[in-house]
Image (cartoon, rainbow, N blue to C red):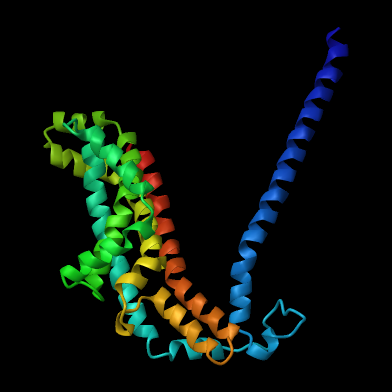
Length: 295
């Protein structure tokens, strides 16, 4: 009997393996197709940035920038408002990231590690704040910034960005802080460390992935934000990069939109985000590995 059942079991095992391989192959093909669909607009932006206006206006699309040039990028970089807008965006974004991470980290630590009166109300308030539409706050934000003299000011815009980013960042960091057992800190305190020392030496290194992920979120939100900056930064000398890009497109539209220059400007605006993410991605991986070893 055993000799008769062996081929049957082997046959079932082979069929199961074949189904699993087929399913994995189909999912891989689907994932690659979705990735290509997602990446095509980015590719088309880069491709168009190297082509001149005449080539882009042809009825037959050009999928490879053969014969292209860097003229569009030169025009963008020589624009008098680009470097100024770049400096303002960098300053506002970095200020927002640092302030949001510090405030959100302390808030997440308080929610996860301490029990105090009003804790649940505070958590509920974070949820309610996320439900408020940004457009409904424009008038109040404008009047508030105007009353304290922070219109067209980097600090004023950074304050508004920080206030918008902090609630969700607290929620992100709260999950990371709650995922680190409090017993680790208690073990350190048994060995003679104070609560602060135990947190800084044991818990904080394990939270590196959460801090990095939160900083990426804060960076993207502050760098790409347009509507709040449009309301608060009304002067041409105080424009961020998204506002400069809008003005750059409108300036081109007075004669005829040069999509090559528009795509080149969009590419230049996206480069700092890509560089930041590539740098932080390695830090995030190192933090995850370090946390696993130390845990």
